[in-house]
Length: 388
Image (tube, rainbow, N blue to C red; front, top):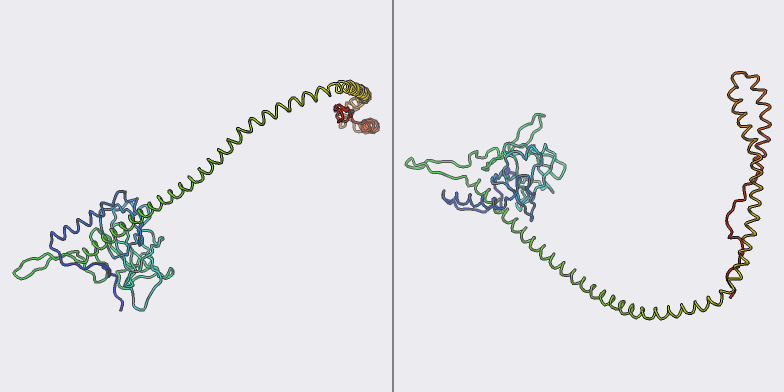
């Protein structure tokens, strides 16, 4: 049969009823454990999942309903400014139901952020969260699609008429089921009119359970960190050993090059000196031949130069005879265009007379060949080098 979400999980350790001093010592110890890990501000809280841990900077513990190590954190800026407390939320297993996943969403994030819950051994789904103090509306998302309220958790309709579960976050944990006791502790009258203080064992067990869980997660995180550091050391040692082997190999390689290069210096110098002497002897033999070839080649270039200069001078003279006519016709055409509107009939007659002249002059200009201004002499076969 189904039962309402509770403040206690099945994993909560059983305790004997402590005396008032013992109770105070236990609560102070739990607060000290949390304070020891709180080295950051509220904005530096970290999300805890099963097998992981992080620092949660808060000295207040509020456990509404249990989780197995998941720490959700509301992300709105307005929530971060409000005082917070740790809370524990459970989706208590219902009969004939076995969901694959359960997520919780709430008014602290305008129902926008889903916080995955962890499945406990008894089939309940649990999460630990740090929430702003006060009343919050929540809903549970079953298997990622089905948004539901738990039937035995307090609920009420919002301004849109939608039904949501209600949780209340405070420093001292309180139940939120419909039948839960509202006071964390109570006094009872026993025989003889003696008033006896009776602590709320439910609230104490919840707080102790979460301290135990966070201590376990912190220990696991420290063990993982030590293991990771050990792996890093071994990785760096392996890489350094491999690097050392490569260094030794390259050192021998460079030493071999150095020895070979030293020997090469001597051999190259000797071969170079021999080649210089050979070149000098060879050049002495061809010097006489080159002197004769120089005379022949120089004369060939001079003759070609004079011929090309003569041709270019003739071309320039022809250009100069045509240029004045082009300039004259240009001026005449420009002047006629300016008078075209003053006397149209005279313009027509003058234009018809001028156009044949322009045609004849431009035809002559078009028939001109480009100047022979090639300044290269590479085409000349000077035959300067001696034949082998």
